[in-house]
Image (cartoon, rainbow, N blue to C red; front, side):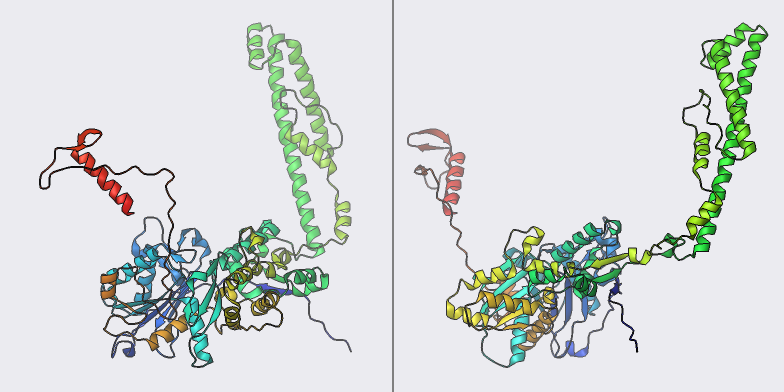
Length: 629
């Protein structure tokens, strides 16, 4: 009994998903009474998630953090996130509010906030009455927080704002699911769209002084995969788009536990045929007529092409013969003028023909007469194999008609064509030509998080940076940190990521030391759920000085750079910037003697000529400011 074997190759198709515009929701009554419920916004560099801080609720809005706006277009014509059904045609118009993972373009950020508030059903004009929880980057610059607070308090008139780090929200949410315990100590490895972070947490608070960033993330992996496939398939440059590369990364890539050993496995032909993913590109069969035609149909089509070619050759020979005959008649008419004795008209016609004498005219007549006779013979006999005489020297040396005649002699006849068509010819598979064979690229692109040098980046990888961070702590602190290694972020979704981190830690840590690696249950969205849970536990009241919340009064009194710290927020780090000592000692300040209460017209300085008082005072003030700084 024979069993049918399944094909070895795996063929996949690109989904090329098209998004639909976000609906406009209505605010539920529980979000307004007894007090307005906070709005939670996970302001990510790849996706933005927004929803209400209600128990058991999920994000209402999920869209790409991009805006498409043509030059000179009105503000209402801007497309945000899911309003862009297909990103690739408008990629040259896309703008983001981020530079890496830091918000710098607040015009786009304002458009995204408008989109969120409109689709969440907030209809209050020029005012948002709900508190807001917004995520920000680790160690966010003070200027960026100041601009964000100014936008929220001045433009939207929000009552309270809370800032937190997305990775820490995810970390605290995971720890809360494990059970109510005290402040946790651990280290968070977060990898997002633009960069990755190593965030040590000591007793529930971020140790910002030892936090590090690696400028490698999902966007670099997608660009690297695009370059690899475009070099591999130069005939499909337009089809290898960034959107498709992101789909390849999310659904077909994986992280190897041992990168070099895995590459050796790909050297085996059997392993390659079993593991390679063939991505089928869209194509049209009209581009290749006759791909699926039978041998008889192909033979008939070639015979028709041959007949058309022979007909064209015969028609061109007739046209050439007619042109040569007309030229010959014209030259004979000029020669008749000589025979009749009309020398003036004869010489005038010779000049028009660019000839010098009657002998040259006679030579041209003889050559044209010979060409016409040979053309008539070829036309009567029906083949172009006889006679390859010179053509008229009045025309260029290579003539179209003679080229066709010479080509006709090399064309096969019908019997030869039939014999060649009867032979077995390999068929061209158009579908296979439009396939991308994704082999080692499946593991090479996620590997750049651990080896940025693959893309030419001169920086440490994620695990090397982790080792550097751990080396800054005492051995007992290191044991506490590695006992709770937490992985989160959308770029941690590759299969095998947890096993790779465990293997690297095993090689990094001392012999028989213990560590524990945990992956977030939903690495991409756990930050929003963690921010929601925090907002439910710390609902703002009308008072100032609440932990984690910045009220409008705090903003007006303490400025936009003010941050109310909490368990998932950034922390204030005082930085002392040492100024270099001047190389040349500054001379002693001159003394200026002026009468108090009088307006001096000139200042007398000992040892210095009198100068206007205004210039002296300006110089003294400038020196005072320099000393103060």
